[in-house]
Length: 115
Image 1 (cartoon, rainbow, N blue to C red):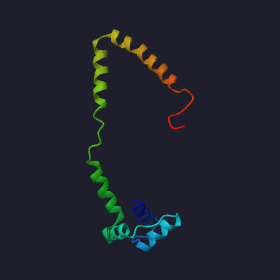
Image 2 (image 1 turned 90 degrees about the horizontal axis):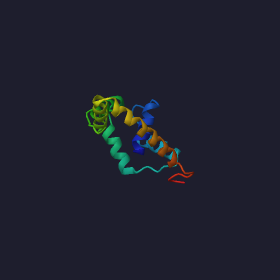
Image 3 (image 1 turned 135 degrees about the vertical axis):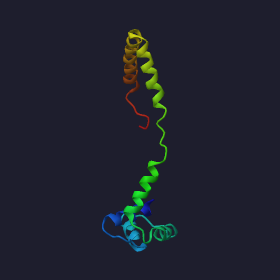
């Protein structure tokens, strides 16, 4: 990833075809040693390709990847069905929310998990 990040930085800076030497220069400027094998492979893979086209293709591929988020729908359905049952269900739920807020404030006991 560090090699690709340096390559992309050079591309953003106007270097349309960064060399291995260019990438090494960027990495060494921040104290990082380049891995010759990975760098050579990266340069070989990206040689002659337009960075903007590659980013566009990657974005299209990522858009087709399922990203979850299906679990939240069930809770919304339960709340809607409770409200449809009558006003009593809605009245019962409000005090429960207040109790949860109190519990959240009790969780902060003056120290953090990673302190």
